[in-house]
Image (cartoon, rainbow, N blue to C red; front, side, top):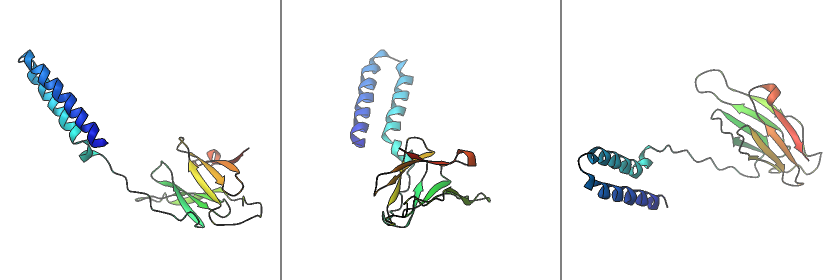
Length: 156
């Protein structure tokens, strides 16, 4: 699909290039610009950043890590009880650690199975939805650097 789009871009710019050459010497600069854009569209994959695939995790594992849009922060979930921690790592300083997002067992003492709870990201980078996959209950989970902005509240 990407190759087809690139071919369309190339054909479009080549059509412009061929039809504009009849306007004379002023078009020399324009031709250079057109060639530049054609090359840019053809080779844009060379400069595109690639992201490493996320490691596979067992859905029934007791603990799972969920990626946030902050490169330094993950959420660790106890999939049996719904307990959560905000995990932060650092490559140079001492900003490593974890803080509790939820210390309460959300099972109400029933069916403690690995994989019972899971997290779903939302379009807000700080907010996830926690789902009890057995009874369907949901919670809004918000991670934050500031303690007062961290929340886990039921969604009725």
